[in-house]
Length: 111
Image 1 (cartoon, helix red, strand yellow):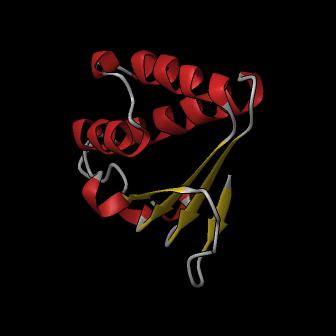
Image 2 (cartoon, one colour):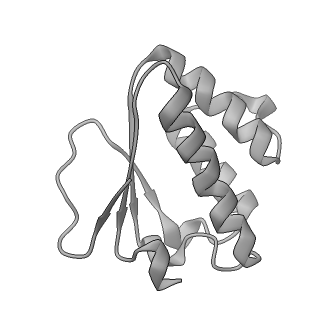
């Protein structure tokens, strides 16, 4: 995971998500499903998200650039943010291809 506070970095091939449009878990799942063309059976649990992202990482590396990261999941209970990054962390260490998550605009410590 990378945290950027200055101008958003140029990341060719990155999938860009806006934290401002992912303030809730359902909105985050919808944004990820649309941006990554995830299967319709995505579901609504962190385990389901982990499963479909792992399937996506079977196909190749993935870079997610989250702009307005300070807005990400702000309308959810505090623990939901930590669960998302637990999913990302697990995938980054166990998926067959690399996962890179770049946060622009705020760090998790700012929450």
